[in-house]
Length: 563
Image 1: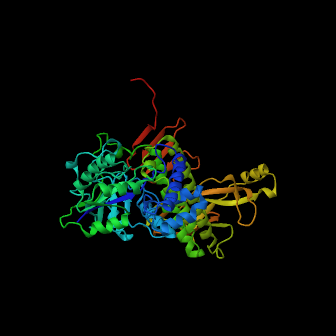
Image 2: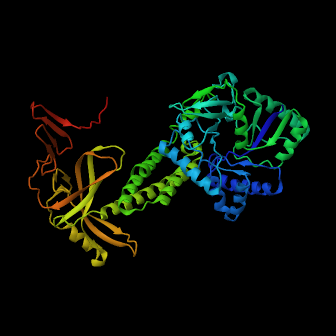
């Protein structure tokens, strides 16, 4: 029986890397133009794998919206193979939720066009997380293809010595920590082993002699995979002619222009019984000795900090609050949150979040971080307003100000909550802004205390009142600027249940029973039954332990002297 050679045309598309995003973007438009034309002019050009990320379609149609029907025809015909991810993310530098959302949004976007390729595609990811088999299986994917983690890769993606391989074959089983198992396909000769196939006889013979030997060295079956492409590779327009020549030169092989769906079905049917397994993380960093992939975890740390900040804003604040608000409004901002996620995930490919691209790439990333963060903040603020509007204030005493404390975490929380409450406002329509400010600023101080919605007193710390400028943005009219007098309340929270909110009330007047405060009126002394802390005029601290009488003076003294 002939050995079968599956030639899959593709281009691994780093959206940004050694050039700014728009430089790569314009080249993507040219690639897609050529590809769609080739689908129409060469009936033997059967398929093109669009790198497993649906965002490429968005990028192309952003410039060529009139090509949407041509793209749809190519997908319907099975020529343009898409999905299942939104982008090709770095597993380790983004959150678990971001990994899941990349899959969910990618599948959702793929299904708008047609049927996604059900393959976990990680051609150039800097290692793969151990939970990938679990996530893939739950999403209905039973196979993954990857280039790193099982073997050492050298400078400029050079494949190093075979004896260092963790797997006998390019095919293997990959197990997650819970023993979930999927089929693993290693690009043992990288995802460019069938790139730029010659159409001239002598060059083709030299090419195939080497490439076939390389593939057979690691293949566990008679189905050989040739990846016709590499990073930002233009489509090879004469690949079908090259395949025809290969069939003439090597009658003992059958060369076909194919796709991952057909290849995976064929190779998995003929797998040997002794096929090996790899388990958990695939993170081999035996590179060229510089350990450059591992070091990307700390490159441009500010990117990692911003990513964590924005992920928390969306995952841990905006989405839980939106879910709480859904309980009272029946509405949920699906589209807005998807937009926030998509904007953030554009920063999650390895060349982006790893901080290993040119400066212009990372400058643009900061804009995306800020955009996604602002969307998250807006949605959180809207949810809080909706929850606040649902508070029943009919039984509250006069001159009281209800407010909410929310726990958006997935577990009970104990700690302190700090909330700024508006006591009074004067809109600009009422007078000159400067005078409105003065009127609020000169109001005599008043006493306040905090109670629960059930009337129980809460020991809270209250700031002095202050005046700020702000404005409302009504849904039905122009913005309303105003000056407002506000106060900041800090109160203890104990074992507040997960995903819950409590109502409190700030009430004008002293509490029925004044609680002892640690802070004395002069603002320089903190004191309770155990200790007394005094701030001296020179900025140093004096701390006295009342139980022993021992006193420490001149704490927090800064000295600037020679050795």
